[in-house]
Length: 171
Ligand code: AMP
Image (cartoon, rainbow, N blue to C red; front, side, top):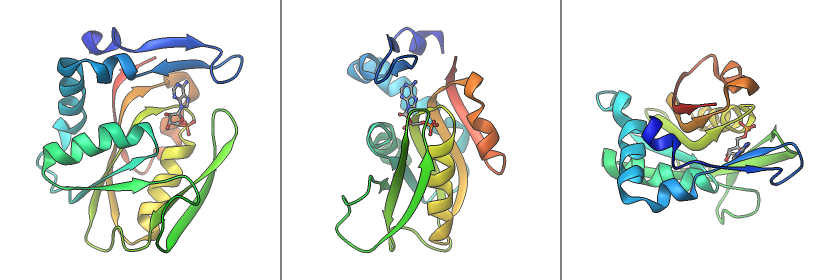
């Protein structure tokens, strides 16, 4: 994972003073590192009969879509409010910086679906916990949550004690 870590750029004080922003754009620019990251994200779940990958706007769309492609299954976008055109379920949550909501189409998932949740990074865990709640509101099961980066010192994992959490790089 040291190979991947070399492609994560730290941007101090973005988007606010005190935040160390982990910029994944150098990683996704590299064909080899992008491929490695996606393969490592899905590897523990290859035998788990996952039926869908869900990813959060916006960087979760990058890794989530590719994970779904590699698993040969569909991708479910969890979007910021007002973006999805059909009927939605909504969940609000706190961020490391500010607060936000996520929405999903009511018919995106249902009973019997076994979902892998994917995002670029887990910080406080609020986004991922809200996403798991959203998926479960639709009657689907969250099999695991997978992240490229985990900020261990923010203890986001403690928001996800009911789920298997898989992260590639720890800070
Ligand atoms: P949280 O809900 O606190 O776990 O925040 C996770 C979400 O915010 C993810 O979608 C990340 O993309 C983004 N995020 C939070 N903190 C950072 C950070 N330090 N660097 C990059 N992205 C971050």
